[in-house]
Length: 387
Image 1 (cartoon, rainbow, N blue to C red):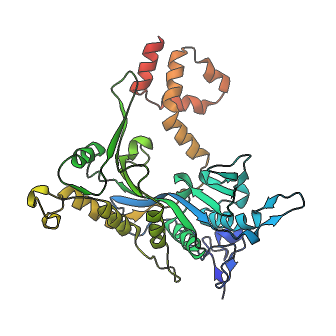
Image 2 (cartoon, helix red, strand yellow):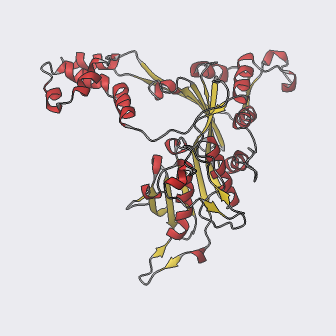
Image 3 (cartoon, one colour):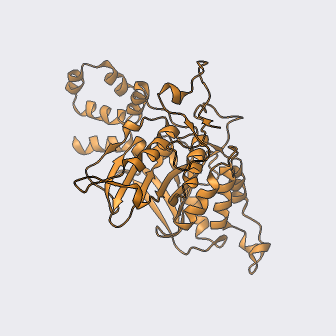
């Protein structure tokens, strides 16, 4: 009995994937089919009320092990891999809704692989490493954001069925309630209440040159080479206010990533193996905990968990997941330009008093963007230095 992907969302009787011309049926028993298990691509809104925390996958790197006999060597000795790359491209396509044709082969490789291709959201495919037959897939944050929770779960289940190995997986919690700030986390991590096996932490601060403006604070617990590392930072500053939350980013590598991957998907019936929020809180507490040291100086089990950490863990357990980011339209680009570029344009217009660059464009929208923008301290400082 074949699976069918996604139900109709417009009453036409066709799924989004069918309208796109995709082949949407697969057979249960064959492990080499080019499509993943059934996905719910039509997830448009969250069920229930808005929650104070959201959980997401922000980076996923997988290695697919390919048998040497599956490659084809042509008369010139060139190895053809596309018969094994296409199933992976297809799985990403079905999960994100982007066409397979958006994968573009590059003229260089990466990380020891001789060939590479870039796809939607900066996704990378790497293949043809010396002495190896594996194919490596990297899904950075923007690519992961194109999946819904359901399509990501199905994609991960599809990868697990093919015995893919995870080399890195980032599971994030965005705390909109802002239980603590990154600098408070630094203070707590330097105090007696922290319980963890790691021995090193680090704080990075950003600031505007010539101003007192803080452009970001990031607290790290653990080392880059560790199996797990925690990063806490103000996502609102990094995203220009798009995600007004404190992000707790738990990076897992190698064995830690593989054990996490096996629990992020769904079972054969489509039921989640674990809720992502519960899984994040479980992983976080096993990596770092905060318990009141004065309760018992010798036995950690007798210490109460710090109230602020109790609140954070409970938020994580009940966190909802992100919806996929849809392809941008012109209005989305204008909004982004207004937020990110508008102040710089206004600074230039202020410096060039006659505003000739604006007249050259002949576009009133640029004028509207400038009028609706406010100069930030860093822009005023640039003007002061350039006067």
